Length: 395
Image: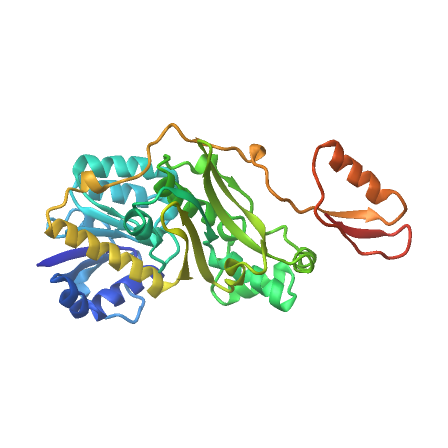
C-alpha cells in the first residue's frame, strides 16, 4: 500500500517531518507494510536550502495545489497560526482528505469547527504534534490510558519558559538576561509573548483537558499567567523554602468541576517534575486505574515534533487500510455536565512577597489581615536590615 502526502509549510517542523519520511520510509514500510510518497510541498519560499532533497516539481508556492490534488491522501498543515491555516484545513476536509496538524493555537480556539467538519466528511484529524513535541501524550490519553478515569494532568509543556526559569535558578540570571539568551539560542521567538506569558502552554492544556475529561475545547475559560513577573529574588526565596518555580499547566476534575490553569508554581524540590530542566517537557497523568505516570522528553524542535507528525501520518494510513471509520474514532469532548471552575473559586497554597518597612508590629499587622480572611500562614521569611528600611517579606 502506498500513501501520497502533501505538506503545507516547509519551516522547522516541516523540514523535520520530510526528513524523517525520506530517511525512514523503508523502516516504516517494514513495520507497517505501507510506503509514503511526498507528492507535494507548499511554502512561500521554495528556494532556500533546507538540507533535504526533493524533486523540483514537488515544490509549489500554492497550498491549493495540494488541497485540490485528487491523488493526495493526507494533507499535513505546518504553517501555524489561525489564518490561513484554518481555511486550508477546512478546504482539505471538504475535499475528503485526512489532515495532520501541529497547530495547537488553531485547535484550542477553533478546533470544534474543524472536528465537526471532519466527522461529517468521515476523515481523520491527527494532532499528536500539537502538544509536547516528541512526547506521545495525545496517543497515551486516547489509547494507552483509555481505560482510566483521569483525576489530574499537570506538566511543563513549554520549553522556552522552562529554559528561562532553569537559567534563573541554576545560574542566578535575571529574567531579561535569561530571555535574551533563550532568543540567541533559538529557543524563544523575537516576540516571545506566547511562551513567556503562558499562552502556548494554555493552548496545549486546552487540548489535553478536553481529551482527558471530555469537556469541550475551553480555551476562553482557562486561567493563564506567565513568568514575566518572576524575579531572581522569587527564585531564591522559593529555594530557601524548599521549592523550585516551574510554569505548570494544571487540570484536575473535582466534584463535578474541572480546573484549568497555567501559572508559575512552587514545586517541592523532591518532586520528580521539579528536576525537569532546560527545554525539556514533562506531563504527569493520574488515572484511577494506572495511578501516577510521567511522560518526559523533548517538547519542541524539528525532529521531535516531526516524529509526532509522522506518527499521525502512519496512524491514519493504518486505520484507513483497516477500514476504520473516522467519524467513530474522532473524539473531542462535548460533555456539558462538567463546569470549568473559575480561578477565583480555586483554593490552593499561595506565595506572597512584600516590600515592608522593617519596624515593630509590621509582621503582626500583615498576619492579622490574613487571619481576618481565614488564611493560615505556613512559613515566613523576613530579611532584616536596619530598622526603618524596606525589606523583603515572604509568606
